[in-house]
Length: 167
Image (cartoon, rainbow, N blue to C red; front, side):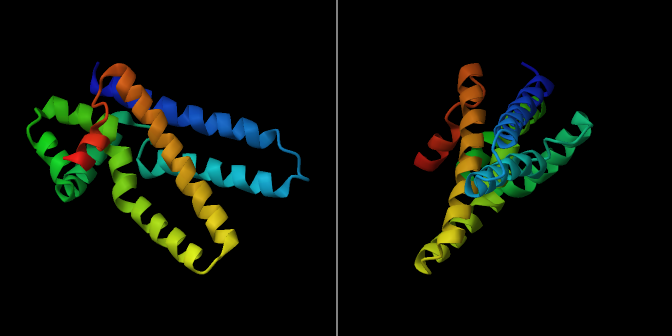
């Protein structure tokens, strides 16, 4: 599988999650305010995953080149992933980036802060923020699971985050 095919698959999965959520949102009546807000937050997170991971840009080659730069800045902070990445050929690095950059970027830059904010909300017993952070974090984890399911099915760096956390 080429890096562009991998890239397309990850983008398609992200768009599919977004579209499925949008369809659910469109089916919720205006009277169901809390449910509507929850699904709006979820939808926003799927959009975030596509934008933050540079997946929703139009030129795939340009996007991949930008993501290679981003990866070179982030990957050194993750020794086990960096070790794998450093040993790859240029073509394999493109495959790695196509399959994993969005998730690595979100795990590195966004997720830790969200867990910190959730802990603050919990300490303050702030039900509104607890509700919102749980939805946001949950939606991103669902996106990670969808990406991981595809990687496992296609044997493209399956379970790499489990291995990185255990290694």
